[in-house]
Image (cartoon, rainbow, N blue to C red; front, side, top):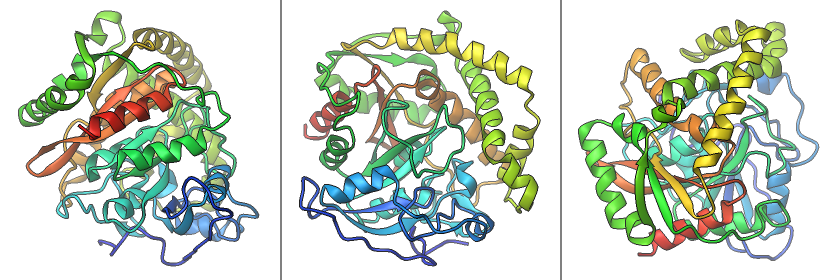
Length: 395
């Protein structure tokens, strides 16, 4: 089942801007995991929607954007309880990928990516835990930002795994992504403009995991875009630091699963919702994570976080493909989707475990399908990353 667009049709909403401001004339949409006053936040599941009241107030991020002059023009579909990266929802269908109608859009912020890529709005809010802004951005050919973890308030946003959850956003133009950031980061720890980085280093394993065509396209894109603006330094091999991708993914899945069950397990046990393929299995695995496993993974995570943060300095960024390849086809089998998810988490876990900002840019294509290239910066360097993306896109 394919939906005609990414908007939530059963709860249409338009909210006029609260004032004139820097985003005047811009329109935006909001993932249906983020509260809008007077609307029920559905969180990607009809049973969640029927067991929760309408929000009394809008989420902090929505309020800030309205106050800056932007107009809210709708809420957008998400994968079930945001626990997916595919953009396929067993209850509401698969959203279109305007960049390639034969492929999935990516999730869980699938609707937000879809409506931006289709040109329905100027930008859209999503959430990102394990890649839910970055992956749809990559698949749909958009700019997307996962901010420094904890820098933006999460008031009014549905939780999956709090120590990873962030609000993020999509735009077709880097300048729009930057304009939204200027509003949301104002007054935060990321509001001070960091020095623009002058060097970058590739994460070797992230490129090694690409197929030959994708790797070639990504490296060409680096040469003609990132490498023109920022000086290349020798690549980093994470395995040499005992920080390989498999280890990162394992620690991420354990911590995320435990936190997800702590946040949502009580509701699941009470209402016994029906989940689609993949999501049901992930929640079953999450329920099985023990306190001891979580504590061991959390200790390991602290060491990994320290190691990863030491690789990124105000002067040097990490460069990596956003996803392990272009989006899968609409008819991909569930085992292939799950395999792709595991490969994807190994890449997205780098910024997730480190808590660092990551920007993805639509700089490469394979078989006419987009593949995003990402830059990861040091803590609270969000504005500098947005500036770099604007400079790269304007070359």
